Image 1 (tube, helix red, strand yellow):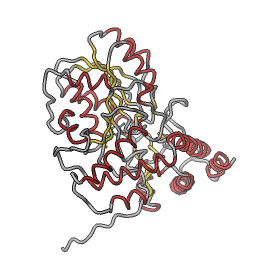
Image 2 (cartoon, helix red, strand yellow):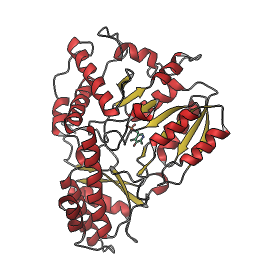
Image 3 (cartoon, helix red, strand yellow):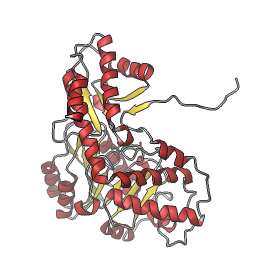
Image 4 (tube, protein in one colour):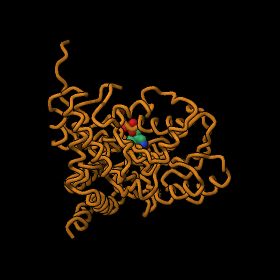
Length: 393
Ligand SMILES: *Cc1c(COP(=O)(O)O)cnc(C)c1O
């Protein structure tokens, strides 16, 4: 068999990421590759840094995209801030808090777990109790937007608690960046990592990170070397941090960085606060439609993520068949439940460029058509008018 070019199907991506990539970003990706030490590439990298500082609302100079997906940003934060024997308070209310625990333990540090039910926000009270009980803790780590459950935690309050008890904060903002209010400097976040394929609507494979002065101080005071050569910030910064004089560390993913640059320019053109508002108003339209159909949310109102809607499945319906049919008949991808929610919920993403009014209407119509064809016990004909009423008043 002769293998020829791969042409992917055209899908609408309304799962937990990646989200739809805007044509402007895709065309940036296709621009000519230049050397990663080329002076004009260096100028673009400086702009990426400035644009990321805006997106994260930070003045920190140690702000740049790690050349690998969100999980590598996660490892960068833990590997640089932890030394063997350190104690870390890790909040877990879904899948990604569990990965934080893995990271802590692989650094030879001790994870003290603060657990909340899946679908609930992290409880500041439980965190304060753990901080009190463990004065030896040096870091508090939590997920701002739990993509596995759709719950948003109060990052501002949790970071204030960390400082009150003399801890640094590590925050997973993979799904929150660009979709929910996030203010790194105002909230006193010490180390943050994100991803490009969720609310930034860029291609997957890069992880924006940023570190406060206090975090940088901690890294400088390390007595042990960072065990990962690739993620050691002392080395990476010689490439990202230099004033023009960049030295070779690794070959930067040149074209992916063009794409990130373009998606951040688009975010700046829209305005960060307008982007947050767009995600929440479209969430309200989708919610109105889903509820009119008879579907419910598992996350309590008030801690629901607009960009990740975790919804219940009508009784007797095989959720995997629904997703298969949406993909096959409508080219629409929605997400399955993860971990303990597998088989029990769908995760409908409204992330970045995917968060638009036509997608909301399309998703409601497609879901209703598949569910009613499968004989599900739902209200038909009510979802679109309900969503439309929210969108157009
Ligand atoms: C997607 C995601 C990650 C992992 O990012 P990758 O780019 O898949 O490595 C980490 N944390 C959260 C909350 C996520 O949603």
